[in-house]
Figure 1 (tube, rainbow, N blue to C red):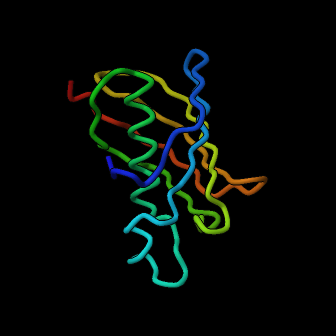
Figure 2 (cartoon, rainbow, N blue to C red):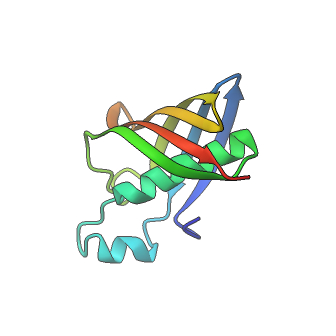
Length: 121
């Protein structure tokens, strides 16, 4: 976990679907380096959030094994859009959790991801 980067404002699980609202901490150090004067949520941090929310939903420790489809469609600037919405569709198969995810802010789709996470524990 990237300590202090975000807080979960809401987390709703309905079967295999999770809807979460996350508030980004625009003052976090990660934004000072990515990029000074024009902060952008790094893609790797967004993927880490997806992993952590999936772990929360499944109660399992996970490791990203395959990211088959990642599309960054809009920049997430925490100074302009500090609240993001994530929708995850999960399925479990052969010691893996498969995730289809979207990340958006307001009416803007920012990220689409299809990934498989290996169950570690």
